[in-house]
Length: 74
Image (spheres, rainbow, N blue to C red):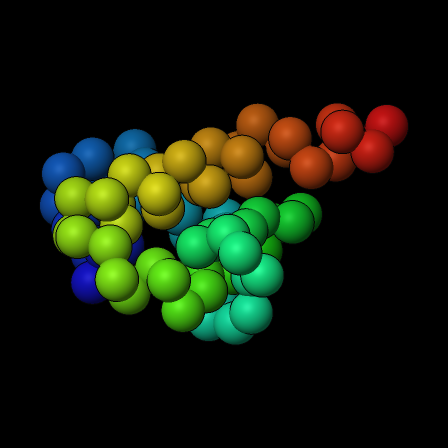
């Protein structure tokens, strides 16, 4: 639902989101986590309001787009 809303509000983020793999899973204490091109959403993500979910998705999409994970390792 959050990704659909994000794509309605900002087509550029929709295009970037296509380069990411979105999965449900365990993220520890975090509500979402990005690693490489994968974004994993934890159980706490569902407890957020829709605007908060959209913002968190956008945040992690930018982590993937700017290759923060790969640059942190290098």
